Image (cartoon, rainbow, N blue to C red; front, side, top):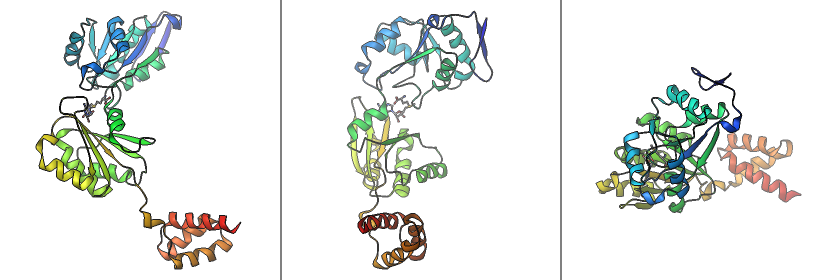
Length: 302
Ligand code: SAM
């Protein structure tokens, strides 16, 4: 007999099997609107597993009926995932394959599943992703904003003060920022983004992706706010907000002659970083710009 620790409250005991006898937990992406976006592999796995752990069984029943899949469903949502995870792990350890799905898109991405996946991995159960639709990736792929580096912030807090605090934390992040937002908060959130990140910051509202009224609108934040405010249709449905990362203003890197003079004197005695920090305090110029100038001019001296 072996005992597997699956959560802070829960131990599962099974007769010691070879790991090959364990079932597999498949993490299966489902469509975010257009049902054709489910993969052939996802359909095959959903039909073959012993059990589907679903965020909302009624919602998923409709999806499965559409594809003629009759696999048994069990609820796995944010309110029972920790406590009920042990039941799923017991079945996995007994050799049953289970598919985890959420209401739309990829499980765990602003959706339940994290605790179950943790528990499965802790119990040495194989966890296999079955990739597919994900709203943030779909939005990013069509937004026309830099996609080489991005940060997904999920849903912002509902309360304005907390929301602005979160926005302030990413204000100077140079990576593309991606947020999920509920339709009834879209206008308030765009207003806070405009106030914290700047009225001119390029932004994209990706709404109802893969659905009939799909809209992908790119405008600076102030104009995006005006556009959404003027049309209540834009305040409906599901949306992803994508915002360009912070860019140093072109003139910010210019260093005044006075700052250059102070920095040059300090650089005689100090390394560039320290010299730039002190010169910034003396002149009020930006430390980054001074540091860059110090590096460029040190290089030019060689
Ligand atoms: N797991 C999902 C995924 O992979 O994208 C996200 C689930 S989260 C609970 C739901 C949020 O995702 C929505 O409020 C919206 O911000 C975004 N979303 C989901 N479907 C969307 C769609 N078709 N178009 C735009 N945004 C969508």
